[in-house]
Length: 151
Image (cartoon, rainbow, N blue to C red):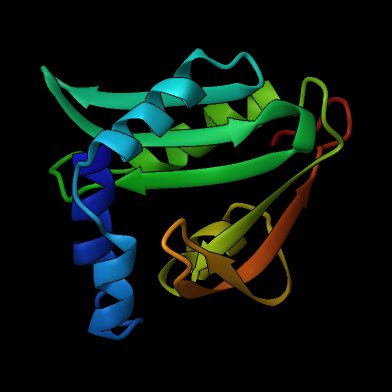
């Protein structure tokens, strides 16, 4: 997952952020980051989904069910289309079972993606990384679709 995270950031966000921000955000695999990912996977409050092609991990998404919060959605460059859309759709189905809405801090390169999936822009914000570095983002929100409506 951490390798996907790095590859996705470096390939998709490069034109939207300065190199210093990319370097802080796309950290490699470290013991602390591995331990954090393992805790999230084991925590029943977290929903962690992965997308694979053959035996290769190409994307993942993380949400916190009780907070209605999408924590991350990353897809590395690959030859399969709509991987991010598929992951987002499945995360929404699971979160919207209990939550009234789903929020995220969308990276500037991903705002159009979320807008196309029904998310509204709430305003600019800074996502603070574990290192303390700030990544400018757009806070976005999608309300749970009404019964019978497609989400």
